[in-house]
Image 1: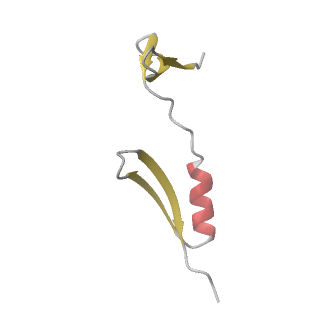
Image 2 (image 1 turned 90 degrees about the horizontal axis):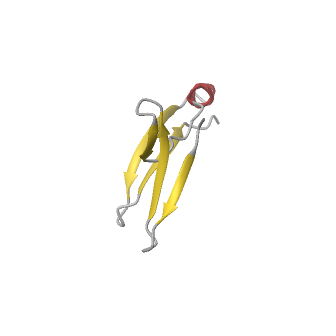
Amino acid sequence: MDCDYQVIDKDGKITNYIWDNQQKQMVEGKKEKEIPWWKLHEIADNLNGTLRHISCVDSNSRRYKRIVIEYEEEK
């Protein structure tokens, strides 16, 4: 059973929980998104480009990820 929950405490703090099969209990964390890497590699190959996976942190300490395909257009 794949479940994830958010708990909001009295102060408004949000905590995410997911099920851990090894520990057989809910643990703090977020579910990883499933990315179709094979499809992205196929698209990059068809464009004759490169695929990059970038992890970023902005000035507000927000963490985010980027998937970038770089290629040159044919003239």
